[in-house]
Structures are given as structure tokens and as C-alpha cells.
Image (tube, rainbow, N blue to C red; front, top):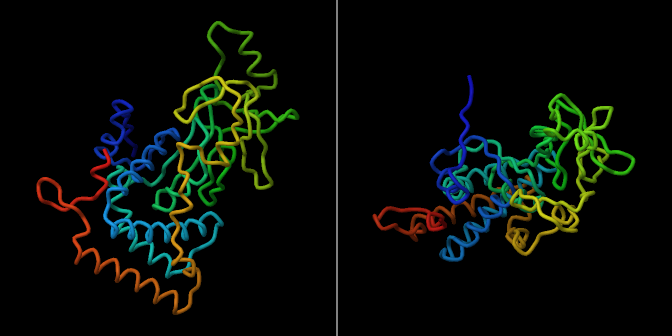
Amino acid sequence: MGSEMHFAESPETVPHNLREVQPTAFLAVPRVWEKFYSGVTIALKDATPLQNWMYRQALGLGYQLTEYKLQGDTAPLPLRLANQAAYWLVFRNIRRMLGLDRCRLAFTGAAPIAPDLIRWYLALGIDMREVYGQTENCGVATVMPPDRIKLGSVGKAAPWGEVKVSPEGEILIKGDFLFMGYLNQPEKTAETIDPDGWLHTGDVGYVDTDGYLVITDRIKDLIITSTGFASRGTTRRNSAHTTRGSNGPATLSQARCAFVNSLGSNGPSSWSMIFSAIATILVSAFTSGMLPKNSAGSRTSVLERMV
């Protein structure tokens, strides 16, 4: 048993490489996830009114299911059935064009990400989880538990390490996965790893009552941008966790559909609404030629025009 690991040829070829490999697990910095979202949004501007209507309805169902997942509850059967229909009629095309239809786990890290962006991917049925770590701890220090996703946090301490917050509010990491030190820089190594073996990350945060780590700021003026690169500045890190920047998904919450607000009930009205919506989508799809034709004359998703 084992797994294959693939690396993108270049930042520009990430979409093509993903569609070629169709990975079952994918890790990327927030900027990549933001670009995928932007690509879908741009593609929808060229879509027909019917395609946009179908996307909004499907996304509304996805958001409803996501809220149950975030609360750790089981969604009602009607809502789960409706989301299955949404996958086959809408989400499957989007995920295939992103190269993520087979993806069972999607990870984001190395920089802050807007919680609403994670919520959007969850609505598509992509199980996205935020992780936290740095070069000095050789990878991941915290992971999101499989049974509960808590947006705005970076999860709990990984099984192979410990995480705590100092009295000054700095996040400290300890474990066998820490690096040995900086090459030929003993003074800098001593500043980073204290005599008790704790790595001083330079990040400020706290552990909430459920044991989830929340990053709020950066002690030093060195911050990590959404591309995963270091830059100088004074921007508070928690702003990226709680707000949506001008380049981020500013209209994600606007995509939720009003007509699915009553899907949380298990009554007959919920069933009738679901099957009515599914029937409308099916009839529209097969009678209106909802998918445009490519140059070869075959039906294709509007997302093929994204790249």
C-alpha cells in the first residue's frame, strides 16, 4: 500500500496539472484556492441565465448542508438527497474542471484564508481543512479534526506534537518533528527553541474552550501573504481570518438561495419543494441545451472556458 505524490510543473500549470492527475488529496496556499473561486465566478459571467440559476440553486443546497456539517449535526434526508442531485447536475462539472472531483481531502495552509472561502468549497462537496505549521517544525503542527470543522481556527494539535500559548500570547510548538537548528547560527537557534524544547513561532493566538487554535496576530513585522511568501508589513493576521479582502470572495454569502431556507424541515412541504426543484432542473437541462457546444460539437461545461 502507498500513495503517489505529484508536484505542479509551475504555478501557471496548476489547473492543467490538477485535471491531468485528478488527485485524491490536494494541498495549496490560499491564493490558489482564491484563484479557483475567481475562475468559477468569471466563467459564470459568460453563462446563460439558466446555468446561473442552476448554480445558485445548487449552491444554496450546498450551503444548507455545510451548516449542518459545521455544527456537527446530521442533515435531514431530503436535504441530503437534494445535494446528491445538485452534485450530479452542477457540482460534478465544476469539480471536474477544477481537477478536484476525486479529491477526498483538500488542505490549505502557509497563510490565512477567509472562512467564507472554505465554506464555499464545503458547499461544493470538497472536504477542505485548514492546517498550521512552519518550516521549523518540518510541516504540520495542527490539523482540523475529522469529526468537526471550526472555521476561523487552524484545528487542534497534531497527534505527534504539542501546542501551547505562552503568557505573552505567543504560540509555542514542541515535539520530535522540530528541526535541529539553523545551520551555523547557534544564537538564532537558541532564540527560536528554548531550553525546554519549545519552538517559538512568532505567531500570536489562543486556544479556545474546545481546544482549537486560533491565530490572531504576528509578533514580528514579518507576515505571510496569501501566496505563501513572506513580506514586511503591519497588517493584523486575524483580519484575514475574519474578513474578506477586495481580492477575496466578497460575495460568497450572497450566493445562498432564498428558496432553500425551509429545507431544514422533514415535513411533506420540504419533500415536495426538493423534488419540484430537481424536476425543474432536469427538464431545463434536457430541453434547453444548457451546456454549450465546443468546437468539436460535443457538450461541455462552461468551466472549460475558464482556463
